[in-house]
Image (cartoon, rainbow, N blue to C red; front, side, top):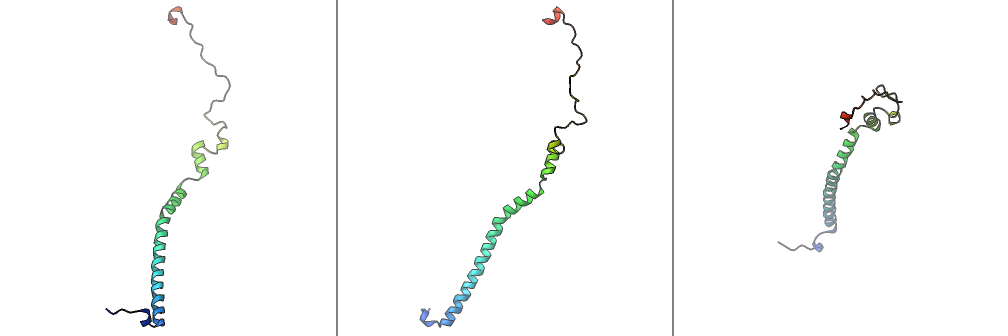
Length: 99
């Protein structure tokens, strides 16, 4: 194989070959960069999709507090109305029951 030097290649040919090589390298580089970005983006995109599927704040409050948190302390239909509760009197104790 003959040794070819830059002096043997016309400047126009060298410039065209350089331009084609640069363009091919640029295409490969951009394709690799796009593949890298897609690979890196996929976990973040999955996390955003999972976050979007979660219930919103109002739904979480409804589940946790049975409505709005501000209404949680208000009486509910089955709540005790408050006040003293009457208890049945305890039976009288006899000396035998004490031991």
